[in-house]
Image (tube, rainbow, N blue to C red; front, side, top):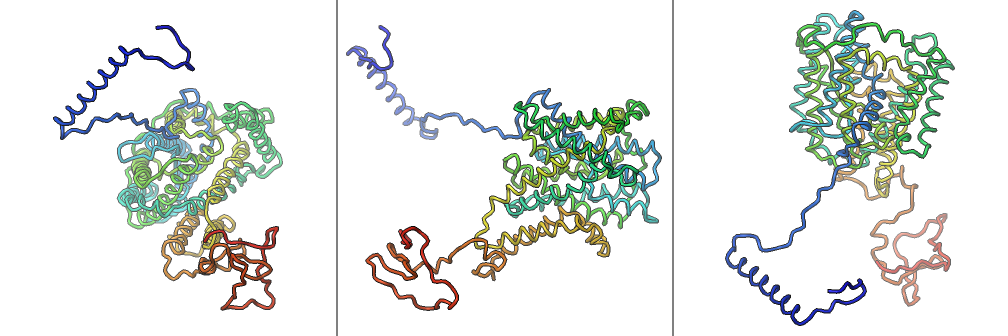
Length: 555
C-alpha cells in the first residue's frame, strides 16, 4: 500500500471491507456468547487502569537534595532541641558530663521520633514533613517536679513522662476525631498564632540568646542577625531555584563565616569531649512514679496533643494535602509512643517543632523524605557528640536573623488561610479577633497567669494552646451550636460590608427596580412601600449605577 498523508482519506477495497466486517461480526458473537455463559461474571467492558495521584509529601528529591534540605531543618531546630535538656539538667543539678549526655539523648530521641512520624509504621506516624523534638510546653512543670521535695527528683520526671504519655496514647482516638472542628477559620488562627508566638524567640536569638551575657542585645549581635536576614532575602531573590530553596542554610553558613572573622564564633569546644557516644538506657536511673508528678505531666500531655494536632493540620494546609481523622490519629499516636520511649534514654516529651513548619512554608519543599533525612542527622548527632558541638557553635544571632523570616512566614501562611474564610453575616471576624488576641496575652504579659492554678497556667501559658482552645470553643458556639443565634448581624461586623436579609427581597419580582428612591415594577408602575418607614435622617435607597436605577433581573 502506498504512503498517504494525514489529510487524505483511506479508501478500502471491497475485499478489505469484507474482511473487516467478518472480524467485527466474529468479535460480536464472541462477546454475546461469553455474556450468555458467564452470567455471574462481570460484563465485558473496556477498563482504563486508574493512575493514583502522588501526594506532594511523597516526592523524593534524591540523596543530595534530601541531605541539603534535611540539614537545613536540623540547623533550624537545633537551638530549640538542646535548650530543654540544658534547662532541666541545670535545674536538676546534673554535672556537665551528664548534661552533655542529656543533650545527646534528646537529639537521638528526636531523630527517632522524626523517622517514626515521617516514614510511619502501621497505626503510627502521619507521614508528613514534621520534625519531632523535646517539647517546650513541659519545661515549667518538669522544673517544678525536680525542685519539689519528696517528688523523686530527676527520675520522677522520667516516670511522669512515661505514665502521662501512656495515658495520652490511650485517649488519642478522641483527638483524632476533631478534624471537623478545625475548618480554615480555626487552622488559620492557629497557624497565625504559631508564627506570632515564635517571634520573641527570634528576637532573643538575634540579641544573642543568653540574657545574662554581657553582650546580650549589643549592636554587634543584632547587626550579625541583620546581615543574616539580608543574606536570606538576597539569596531568595536569585533566579536559581536551588539556591533560593537553600537560602536559609546558605545564609547561616555565610553568617557563621562572617562571625568567625569578626571573632563572634567560638569553635574551641568542638575538640573537647568524646567523638562517639551511644545514649545508654536508664543512664540517669530507673524512673520512679509519683501521682502528683503524673497528674501535672498529664496537663502537659494534653497541651502537647493540642499543639501537635495544630501542627499536623497546619503543615497539611501549607503543603496542600489531605489530613483526615485517621492520619491525625496516627500522628498523635506516634507522638505519644515517642514520648513513652524517650525517657528510657534520658529524654522527655516529644512533639512537632513549629519552627520547621515555617521552614516548609518558606522553602516550598514538601517532601517528607527531606525531613526524614533530617531525623537521620539528629540520630547521628546523638551518636556523634562532636558533630553536635560543631552545630552548637553556630552563633545564636545567626539563627535569629534566619528565624525572623521563618517565623514570619508561618504567620503569613496563617493569614493566607484566613483569607479563605467567609466573613459575611456571621461572627467569624470576632472569632478571629478574640482567639488571636487571647493567644497573645502570655506573649505580651508572660506573668499574666502567675496567680492562677498551676494546671490552668500550664495550659494557657502557651499562646498556641490559648488561641487553639478559644478558636475551637467560639467556632462551636457560633457556627455549630446555632440555636439561639440572632439573624441580625453583630454590631462588631455590621460595618464590614453591605448586606441584605433574604426576607427583605423575597417579595421582589423580575423586572422590579429602584429609581429616585422609589420602587417600580417592570411596566413602570410605582409599588407602595409599607411597614417600617425611613428614618428622618437616613438616606432613601438610591441606585448607584449610571442610569440611576437598579433593576431586578431575577429573584
